[in-house]
Image (tube, rainbow, N blue to C red; front, side, top):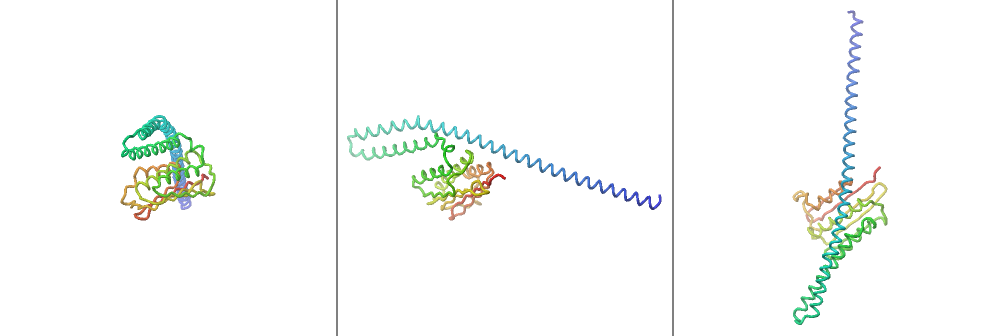
Amino acid sequence: MGKTELLITIILFNTFFLMFVIAVAIYIRNYRQRKKEYLTEIEIKNEIHQKELLATQLEIQQATMQQIGRELHDNIGQKLTLVSLYTQQMLYENKVPEASERIEQVSQIINQSLQDLRSLSKTLTDDNINQKEIKTLIQEEVDITNSFKRCTVSFECSFDQLDLSFVHKNVVLRIIQEFIQNSIKHSGCKNIFITLNTSENILWELSINDDGVGFDTSQTAYNGIGLTNMKNRARIIGADFHFESQKNTGTYLHIILKKQS
């Protein structure tokens, strides 16, 4: 074999080898791209499934709450009304003056309980979430909490109307309720501050903070039922969830749901 033929052979070999390497590289790149697209598709399907699951859970929850509300009104409410009438009759017929004050106290407790029960029953049976604006729903929750005089809740909102679905309104409202209950129960706070905003790129942005004792999240289990519920609700609808708390500095919650591009 002459030098020319050897050189041609080497060139051809190198050419074929280079083409083989390029082909393998292209195959690997396409394989990785297809794998990435497949994983993305799976992730999207999982997100859709989670959202549909949440919507179903909320519908079941709503139906359950309406049933509980009707039971409270029709059963327990009627019994409390009857007890209230009995105590009024006892107060009217009482012949022992020393007992009048205690009977009156019992009557007041029963009447207050009956009023609270009726308010709760109305909240559960009325289709508030579908019929009312999120701003109105939050303000009603704030007013109810303030009426108990356990702490002062302040609410600010940057809009009058916001077109939110039942799922989103339910998530916002339940997270606020959960935060308020946790703060009153555990933090000993005097004030809770709530803000709800929207902007060009953000569907809604919720901020809540209290001035309670707070806690060290590195030392306290982060998997409490209340915190877990708030985090899961935000995660399922695709919202960014940020929670922080430190001893003697209060607790802060920030949730942002961006508009779909």
